[in-house]
Image 1 (cartoon, rainbow, N blue to C red):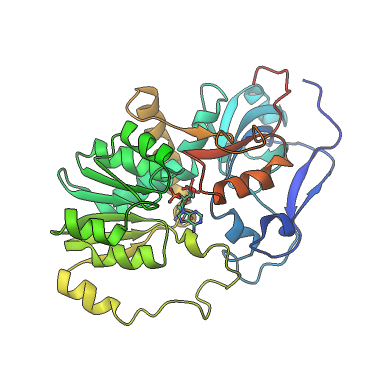
Image 2: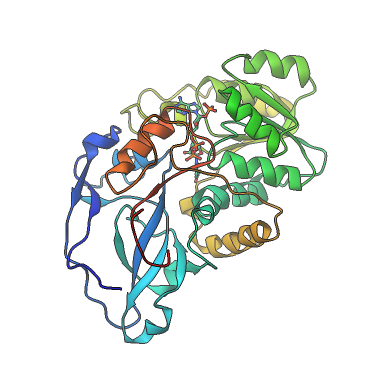
Length: 351
Ligand code: NAP
C-alpha cells in the first residue's frame, strides 16, 4: 500500500465540554519508524460518552492543550520497523490514546490481533471491557439476582445486559425510545423501562418492591438517587458514569457536586454498597478481558451492535470530520449500540 506523506489527526486545542469548540483537525507528516514500532492505519473509531469529559480536561486536571483524543480503533498494520515487519497486513484492535487520527505509530504490545478488521470488534474494546470488568470485579453476580442497567441500549449497556443474562440474572434495562425497547428485548432484557413513557421510580416501587440486587449505573443525577433508593439488602450499585452531567462545564467534584450526607444511612440500613469503576484504572486487565469477550463473540454467545448513524438525518458517519457529528449523534439519545465512524470509507485495501 502506498503511504501518504501527511495524514489527518484530531487534536484538542482548547478545553471545553463542547466537542466542536475544543477540537481542530491537523495535518502532520507520517512518523518515522524504527525498531519494533508499527504504523496502524485506523479504519473504524469508537465514540464514547466521555469524549466530552476528555476535551474538557476533566480526566487530567491541570492538563493543557494541545493533546490527542480518541480512546479506541480497529485498523491494519501498514508499515513497521525492522523488528516488526512480520506484522504488516495484520488486523488489529487497540485502545491507545489519540485514535481520532488516520494513522498512529504504536508499539506491538499496545494492539490486540483480530481475525479481520470489522467494526463489530470495536464495541468489545472500551464498552465491552468496561461491562465485563465492572461486573466481574464489583458486581459478583449470582444467578437469579435482579440487575438494573441504565442506558441499557448504548455502547456499554448492551454488554452489561448480555453478560448479566449469561450469568443467569433477571435483567431490567432503561432506555428512552420505542426502537431501543425492541432492541433490548431482542438481546434478552426481561423488563425494559422506557423512561420517556414510564417513571423509573414508580415502576421500580411497583414491580420490584423487594429491591434490586445490582445496578450498573451510567446516567447519574436523579437516576442515581432512584437507583440507590431501590437497592435490596446487600445490594451493589456500580457507578459507571453520570452522562446527564457530562455537558456541564463544572470540573469533577465542582460546586454542583450533590450532597452525599444522606448516603451513609441509606447504605448502612441495607448493608448495601456503592462503588465506582473506571476502565483507565485497570490497563493490565484489558487484554484478558478483550480475549474473553472475543471468544464469546466468536462462539455466538455475545452479540456486538454497532451504529454508524442509522437513526440520524445526514447518513453514515464518515471521515475524521464525521467524528464531531458522531458525538452529537450520541448525545441526541437516538443511537443504539456502539456509535462509530468509518475514517476511510473509500479505501480500496482489503479492509
Ligand atoms: P451510550 O450508552 O452509547 O450513549 C449514551 C446514552 O446515554 C444515550 O443513548 C442515552 O440513552 C443515555 N442518556 C441518559 N441520559 C442522557 C443525557 N442526559 N444525555 C445524553 N444521553 C443520555 O454511551 P457510552 O459511551 O456507552 O457510555 C454510557 C455510559 O457509560 C456513560 O456514562 C459513560 O461515561 C459510561 N462509561 C464508563 C466507562 C468507565 O470506565 N467507567 C467506560 C465506558 C462507558 P437513553 O436515552 O436510552 O437513556
